[in-house]
Length: 173
Image: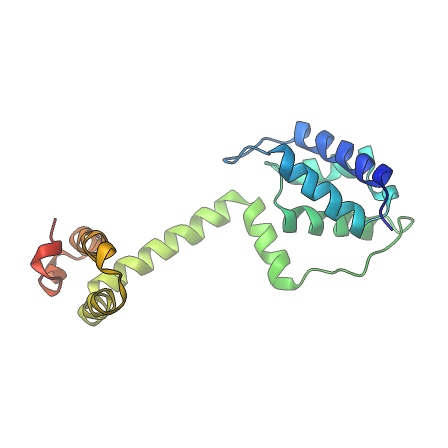
């Protein structure tokens, strides 16, 4: 059972970690720290929340970590310190790979660039452009159709202007 003292200890540990890492693009709010404190106190024994474990995670993290990243890092820290009591949770390989990607900003930006290159290929395919227009006409709410149609036309215009003829003229930029 988690006690108020366990949550308070975990909260102080999270504050130490927050001070040791940058906030990133989203500031770390007290409500988020409170949620993390409750969740972590329920999943880990108090002996995990030491200055050494906070330092270990801060050294791995450029920014204050998200929940999955933080939890996986604590599991890794526990693996390296067998004297600390164990928990049953072990993140999957997919979660671990995503955590590593999030921690490595270059990998994230490479994946984003690859996705942009794929998107450009999609706009160059007339069949996909026609399918996007048909999907928009069929599924978009009437109030959003013009806005989404203009967004679609702008993307086609930017990435494959030769396919702009497949987009209805009322959406053209």
